[in-house]
Length: 162
Picture (tube, rainbow, N blue to C red):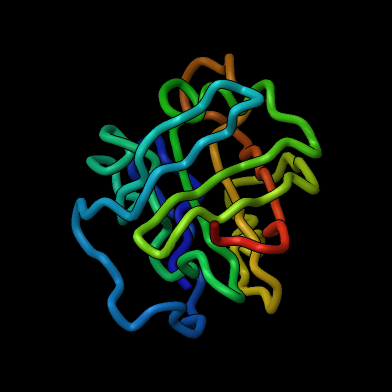
C-alpha cells in the first residue's frame, strides 16, 4: 500500500506491502474517480486519482493502493485542510458521506474521528468490510506544516450503491 499522510512539503509515508486490488481497471493521472458529498458540513467536490501535490490542488485525491468503493476494502481519500477538506472541521460521528462513482452512489456513516501522527499509515490498511477513510492535516488553523492528521473513518451503509 502506498500511503500519503504528509501533504505539505512533498514528504510522504509509505507502507511496503501491496493490498489486493479492488478493481482491475484502476484510474491513473488526474482521472476523475467520482464525487464526494457530506451534506452535514456542506462539502461537495470531485475526487481525482492520486494524492500528489498537483492532484490535491485540484480536488480531493483517491490514495493509490487503497480500494475503490465496493463490497470490501478501505477507500482512502486525502485532501488539504485549507481547501477541499476544510469543512471536515465540523464533521461528527454519525454524519453521512456519499461517494458517487460510475458504479453508483455509495453511502457511508462516520463511526470515528481520530488525531494521529503523520506516520500512522495503518489507518489505510485494507479491511474486509467496506470502509472509507478521509485524511487531512490537523490542526486546521496551524500555520505551516501541520504536525498531525485528522482521520475520519466511516463504514458503508447497507444497500449501497443506489
